[in-house]
Length: 410
Image (tube, rainbow, N blue to C red):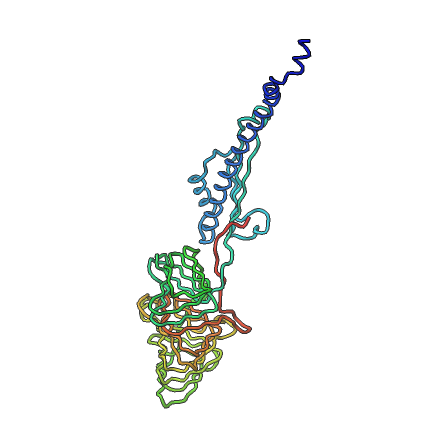
């Protein structure tokens, strides 16, 4: 009878069930703790790999030691003692970026017993993290200011209307690397800078600002240093004159009348290439090089460019040869003491690159001026008037370049 009562009693069921389930409860709790710890270690490892890969890729994109930079970054950021030394590859040994010298892959491994599962595993699990970063294309640019110093390198001021079907980039490290002021209206995308780009209501959609970006390479760094020989006297063309000029070397040009340039390269030895307000200039396949016969010893003597706003200018760059795509090229030895002015009336057109690596270019566009295939590369660029660059070039040398940025790619 007592046995039957005991069997029918339920007062101890909870205790019995708890005792039976206790190993399951403890096991679940242990697995939960291990899972959280494993995820934490994995995140710490991946964060360190990502940071090192990005640091290495930034270094590689600037021709610095990518492996040393990534290693130094790991020393600063890793929170775990690695089981084996980090593997840092530049370029990666396999995959789609294996031929990219600006790509860096970082592989990290960490092994340590977990509190619960460690009681049952003879070998602790191996945690791995792999990250690849590379410099990849970012935007289509047609304006580049090369000045790397802590100064504003692109200025849009006054009532300038800058409408570019392309991007603007600068290597300036200034907190105000690009500025827009006054009633200027700017449409350009992207606008990138190594330094900062202060926000402004002057930027009109779809303009995109990309501050603290990667420095951009000089797209014309490989152009040869100009040589000067056999130069003729300075060319002077009066307002009533109509003439044709052949390729060659000249000790300056002061043009106030009507001139047709024959196809070829024109070297300006000192003085300036100057177009007055009444000038009417035409040339479809020309390159104008501004230099000096004693540029090495006296770089301040290198010729400059001065095009008056009233001038009618229809110039196109050569389409082949050493200077293909270059309309104006100032000797890179020029000292940063001059300002070059590019203007033109509503009947003017420019096709080609305007390259002044070590001096400023002030671009004062005029409504109606044709700049459908133009690139500005200078130490600094100032937009003053209504500037429209439609980066839609016909066949021949392109007048835009693809910018670069560093990001994680795998």
